[in-house]
Image (cartoon, rainbow over all chains, first blue to last red):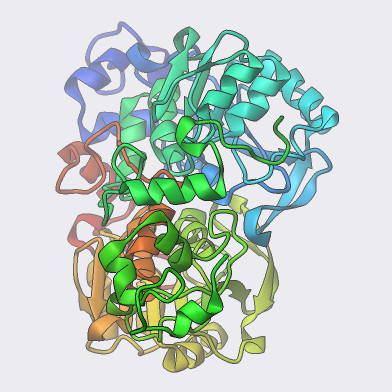
Length: 284
Length: 284
């Protein structure tokens, strides 16, 4: 469906096949968006496709994009399920899952996530994503930390969701970098030399570092990453396909919005939460 | 942390241990919410705990609640990852996962979800949840349909997310019932005798039937189910813990909001989508 010659015609005459990528943004139509999004983004058979030059971020628009999601025992499913769902739908993108030993990992609540690769078997990745968890003991172990640090140092984009940023920060790669985190843990980032930012999405060094807040923030995070790396139309298309038109039934998604007695309840279970300094297994 | 005697003290004097569940709503404090939510809802070690009488729905407040998520090859991870994350955090709730043959299932994009039980080994469940997928061939097969129908007929609450409602409808249990579905498929419900409703959350028969729209609607759906079955404070607490304070970066989550050329793109990939009549493998 995508004419591959279109990928390399940035300044040609405005024939349908030869429109520049910038014109895709300017004249956006179903036909040109088709070129942007590739042949089968909806059902996941990603095909090479261009993205608008203006929003392609640090990657050249047509390069294949490898995204690695780091899994570990005690991780939280929803931290990476949103990003997984979004990234798999982007054109020319390969999403992989890996853990220290490979195979099945047992997430929070005993949820089993299967057939992960071994981190040591992965030479490099364009994007590394470290999701959070209710127990960070596993990814804070030296062997995990060494693999994450190795892959993060070589990655074009170092990213996290929820308290996965604490795992990244502990490796040292976030030294002096601004980062998001779940609200209950965000200020722990400073203990590892990173700069805590209490936002739902945080970016530093022009997108080399991108991070999301707690759990469900992974969806907003991933749409922003998608727009940066594959162009806004691809992100918007994905948002439409996953019907991300949220309608929370209550005002309780953040301490600034929730009833004080609910915040107090979290503080009771996780002392220090409302100060962003909750303790969690694996973190000093 | 929860004094079990509190569970059976609906009208006693207002000592701290003896406050009624109605008083929990009326006087809601950290201490009483603690009683409502049980000892360790945040980290998932669910403990028996009362819910406010006024919002307990069809279940008696203190009954254990079994929730069964139906898995199948071709299913969509994010359809049930939100509900999973929310339901696991509710007090006195047991979330199970099952497929026809048990073991690993291979979801959309090759994502492997592990260690599911066999549907035939499950006698009954209070809540059955059928998530959607990109290929419904598996759950539309007679053997799957028979198991889903058997469990749905005995369940107190019959629920779905995304086009999982088509799977339920095909079993006949939604005959004459109002149901939600992903926007691209919603009107297919009528072909199976259900009543299509293009909303993000739909309820019929006083909550015996509850359904969510496409993919991410599962989060809003699950918070509403949580409020109905375990009380609003438990739902609000869960919303706070998963930081569900959404901030979509684009206006593109629904055809009514998205740029027309993006809707046209979906129509191109899935003919009939904008009429709610997209075709999908497994559905006639």
